[in-house]
Length: 449
Ligand code: FCB
Image 1 (tube, rainbow, N blue to C red):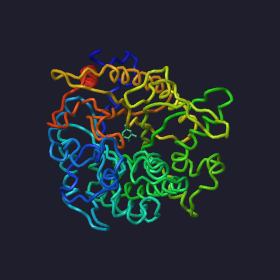
Image 2 (image 1 turned 180 degrees about the vertical axis):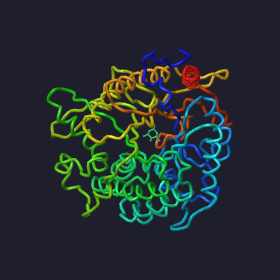
Image 3 (image 1 turned 90 degrees about the vertical axis):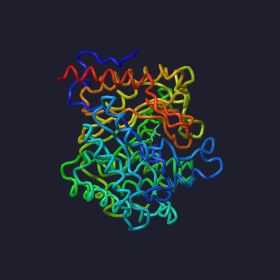
Image 4 (image 1 turned 30 degrees about the vertical axis):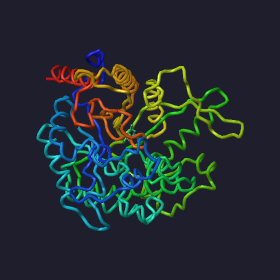
């Protein structure tokens, strides 16, 4: 297939529907010691033996620090409407309370270049690269970090104002807290149930503290937050409650405080011994009117209650999986969006801020034949269309990722890009999926002219 197919009545054909590609700072930038940046928790984590596959790190990554100009030209060439990137906090506030003008300028040239090429800019303020100097004082376990984030959000929004088309405070607070502080598989590598929930609460507080500054300093931009959701399905009828609980801990725990001003009761009850200190007024800070919610979707999970009444994930080996081992199950995207629409009365417009697949991609004679990824995108665009037709308001879709990059604890082996990166030469090659995306977008553009 050389083009993703959108049926003639597809809602994704509307010119207002926005298509984009996404990246994040630590995963692509490199230049770790350049431009006044100081280490983040990921620089530290990568140095821990055994923490990251192949002992990979983000020192150079895709060298976007030097190649940003050609990368943005390439993004424009794909025919997308928008580019989602994140800013590295330790590039902008490299020491406590000290702003690095050079860091702001680095992002300013990127934003200007995008605008000059007709691309909207979606910025995420926190995509997991916490300054190490804050981790040294407890990181997200320390309530103070939420106030440090407030300061950082203030600095960025005062400088850029409405120049940034869309601000997201956090990317996937689930991963930042549970993977980083509960299960220890992401930076900073802390393991503890209480730590997982405490860091989660402080992340949500950080979101709430930042929002008024974003509103004030960038009144014409959109403001939101990005969540990941891996919706759960019961293995048997007797496991329905297990699936409900899995969703509660997995994403209601993060979305409910923002949209409803409360934490889900099921989690408060089941995890009562691990609950963080929630101060009076915290939930009023966290609850916020958002212009959009970003949803990152990759896969689903199937769960059951085990003999001890614990929730256990049950692999589905007979279904198709991507190279990273995630089941391909597009129907779950439709189901998820419908479930969210039902759960929240005041659900703001949604954007799919990430969706994509990892492949074992080789570049042969200048071509990368990533057929599984092509099918992945095709079927997920159909699943998204189905949700929109069923009444969910979704305004945009970003492919994860623009190009292969540092895939966190998996290092460089897992390639999520629609563009292939040769890490020896930094050569970029459009994969079949990038060509199919581009051809669909160019066709849509012609139709809408
Ligand atoms: C998401 C992250 C993103 C990338 C994809 C594969 O959880 O937000 O940075 O790693 O998964």
